[in-house]
Amino acid sequence: MDIKGEYLLPFSLLIFISIPILFLLFTKLSSTIKKNHHHLLLPPGPNGFPIIGNLHTIGGRPHESLAILAKTYGPLMTVKLGFTTTIVASSADMAREILVKNDQAFLGRPVPDAVTALRDHEMTLAWIQGAQQWMKLRKLWKNDLFTTHRLDAFRDLRHELMKNVIQTVAEAKETGEAIVIVKLVFVTTLSLLSTMMFSDNILDPKSPDMDEFQALVARVMELSAKPNLADVFPFLRPFDPQGIKKMIKVSYDRLGEMVEICIDNRRNKRASKADRAGDFLDVLLDFNELPAPQGIDRRDVRLLLMEMLVAGMDTSSATTEWAMTEVLHNPQVMAKAKKELSQAFGPKGFANEQEVMQLPYLDAILKETLRLHPTSPLLLPHKAQKDVQISNYLIPKNTRVLVNFWSISRDPAYWENPNRFQPERFLCSDYDYRGKNLTFIPFGAGRRHCPGLPLATRMVKLLLATFVHNFDWKLPNGMAPEDMDMSDKFGLTLQKAQPLLAIPVDISDQ
Image (cartoon, rainbow, N blue to C red; front, side, top):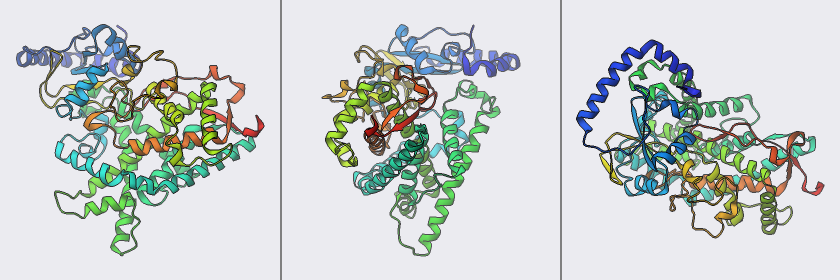
């Protein structure tokens, strides 16, 4: 038996130390399941070993392993991960059953043990269980923060940041320096988000603190999705056997500390009757001052701001890097994008957001990037809040449910040449970002789709247009496009395994 990658060392320790206890618990649990659910028919799935279930087949790249298993066991299957039963949907029809038709029943979230290191994690928008509080926070996010009017109000800020990007890239061009694309995007996105949230940059883009902050965010996303024995053997949660919760807590505490300082400073200004900034923090503090049930407390303010920072920066950075990687890997795509941008803005005109959002080929590039490199290859897990019947199978209450978008987005039943980067497939199509067509759900679908979608699409398109329109690019050390490293690494977001380095070249030099 071969235990893959991430589980090898911790699982070996577990076997030597705890196998007698595990065996007794497994026996007791199995008898309980048979007693209480003998009449339930779960979807089919692979046979597993005692105690570990199917852990030996999953490894550190679960989106790929589960896609392979689905070819044998079908689009709705059951896998046993230790003591945890998980239902996996790997087709558009099954995704529709879970995310749309039965979205109320699957509104719950199973919380990874790593996330419990975040103080008040149970009240975050991503992981909250109660429908009433979730609906209140979701409504606030949608109707008061990420409205079209509010996002339009920050358009000049985004334009100013794009001018800073152009200047930074131009300086690198003069020295022939290779740019780490994801780092430049991260700094730019942080400047945007922090100004929208706090009316100021919370960090100097050139300070060492910026590197620390980027590492903190990356660590949170990596450890949140790291295979964790405490998730598949829940009785181990108090012991944190791999030290994951201890490591991630350092990042959570540091991020929370930075946000708390911003909240305290603003509350002091408001107390002194200073002029309102009108940013996200002011909006949240306005709600903080309302009585229940409309109001929110300081905890909600802190958690919402932290979620915006972490999720917004990581997903936007990863998607922009993958989009640039693909256009450099496919010169014909780069040429078409340049032509579209030149027709819209002239050879060296500034790419303004209003017109960028209307460019069909640029939009197709972003959609194709999200299809091949989804920010969440396995959408955030759902939990059945009651027994649910789907396709003659019954999913018991409290069962963990995953939708494998990575599998759906590369399924030849839905996509011709699914592994090829081909933006043209999205031209003159009805695919949108909100999951109307369940074969394309990069931001999820149904009630719990990603609420940050409107800002994310604006920012990524504007960054990509700025990179492509204002410069030509070459790869370091004379590397040919076909030799680029296209590998990824699994996490809450699907990051590029090796950061993209590219050297800007003035267009007139070509």
